[in-house]
Length: 595
Image 1 (tube, rainbow, N blue to C red):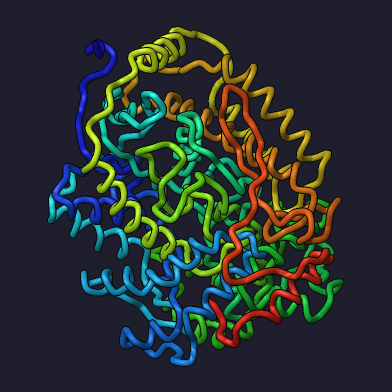
Image 2: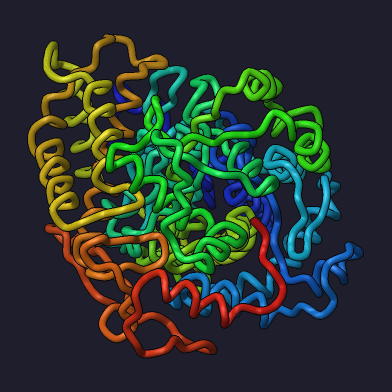
């Protein structure tokens, strides 16, 4: 029997969706169309929290399909060319079945959003640019209209299984401090990445690897965890804008310079062709992040730990004209950056640098977005991505496409299955863990552990890695996992909006995903996509064209799995990393992707 003194209530729903961003809302909307009970829980406020609302929010598709939707587009483009670009720029590590689903379904989900009234700002060759909050609000309105139930400020902290199948989850109501049991026939994870684990990041701070970690504890496979995209040139200073990608976009539009502390152009020591490729295409994130990080690590960084981005004040009128086409009056995504203009007029350099932006790895899924646990589905950034070793095209489109697919198949599963009984041992184990935690009166604060995690992730698992640094990081994570985590104490007796208790759950999830990310990074002895090993600075298509998968079977097991190669096959050679960039660029179509 469930004890009412600990779990405030038991809720039943056919399909439970976890995550209030674009992927979760699309999944809930699609699942509800089967006339089932569908509930969506969100760690923050539904449609206003998570990755989608603050995303750059371009929706990408091939130019011909964009043209067919009534926008300029590029009629000579094709889905085949788009497929080619995603796979080649992903260093051939993509699941090509998932790439096919992406390019085929992108026009369908985008048209659905347009039919629902999505507002757009402008279009590019392969993209519709909008605002993340427009995407989520458009989906939220429709989902609410057809009867999806919502719970705001509710965090899923554990998945419940019985005989290897999903039976529900334990959720924590952040505002009331109550623990809930939610019984569900199927569950869809749409919780994004683990941005908060990094000192510098370009994401929402409520993204802490929750979905990946709880899925792994429940028996789901995780893979490609070593691949982390760092967005170049995010703002480091002034601190009120820390992490914003406005300067990344500004740098692209004006083709700006970047200087180290010696006022040297950081591009000057690199091959001109590589600089051109690495500055004007989707490679700019990994290339500029890589060389910026090198300058910072070698002691030539800016005052606040980044790189200087100088803007000539005499060119402000020209810059405002160019940038104003897209973001008038120095406003970007509702944020007023007009103070940057004053800094430029006063001869101040902006301080920018790399920040964790997107995670290619996550829950292993198939073409139905089903995980290795029956009844558990996952979408978007929470999954082992279709983007392989380097994300190109839009993550917003990825999460919408996979959300629609997951919603359909999760509801099909729910229609064919009854509620699975709860495992009383799991419930008691969780209750004991929390009660023991709340009894502690001294120990280590979560804020101390979190700060250490963020600093070490940045220093040892940033854009450039090496074996000694990764091993040092693994030792650090093992210490937290086996010692520090068991010494955490919760400073407040009240469970209502207890930031320390919330942080406890987040740290538990972050150390899970970070351990796997580091172990995969150490195991992959090459440089591929956004994973750069300075001690193995080449891409090895003979020995390393494979996925690294983790299985939670009492102990963590690492497995190798062949990449699904279906239509495109890479050269079976070993290339210096930057030479590989040149080779892959030559295999691209003549239609550029979107930034």
